[in-house]
Image (cartoon, rainbow, N blue to C red):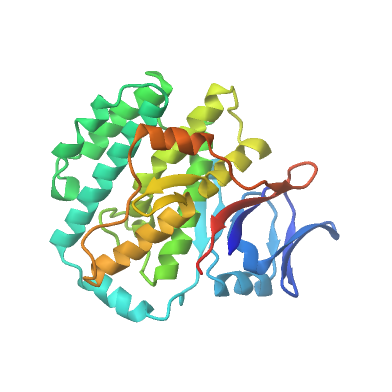
Length: 327
């Protein structure tokens, strides 16, 4: 089943349910509608939005996360289902029982994968990979030596230039990264919840105010794909978080990336990673399913095609195809 990331970017919209559809209206004029079963994530990125309770319930019953964006396109909150898998209780029990060494080993694998994907992103643009590749064997259990932080300092200056600084409150490249990470976070939240795991029980992230710490853990190997897409937009002189650029950042979820299972849309690779984590907790397997960190794979992903988008004439409300839903 093909799903869509739906973004509401026009102010003062009214979102409600009409039979089996999510309907978006403005001043009593319908702007568009999407079958509720097709919505993979709803990103609310505008002022003055009004929601019907029936619409919210219909989406969460389908396991669809609703992302409420605040300043600079960053998520301020996510509404998720509390009951999303028939074995949810058993899997949460296994998650809670996971030993500290197991969680440290998993975080080690995630950091190694992230560094590899960062190196692959650099290589896709003809930039040197060794500064990141050299760190991978140095990542110990739990990344006690913080090779992730060392890699970040090298990576950003190589990918976007020595003057670039990652700033969540920044504009231009930083704002595009924020938006891309929001799409990625919503996608991972959906698939993680669908496995029956609890998003607030982390492997590594420890921010007491973050209810989605496990989501943020699992984002790390896929963040470099967002970075690669933003670099592509920047090379074209496209720095604004406008309708066209947001469309490209949403469509990246539908492009094929190489995994152990072959070429799969990013969203399917994410689904497999989340399922593999549940299986690790339940002692059915040892390792996570992670993407292949080769420059050629990132290059092919950047050049691959995704399904076409739909938008209204002024781009205010966009229906962005992105996700292969759970079977």
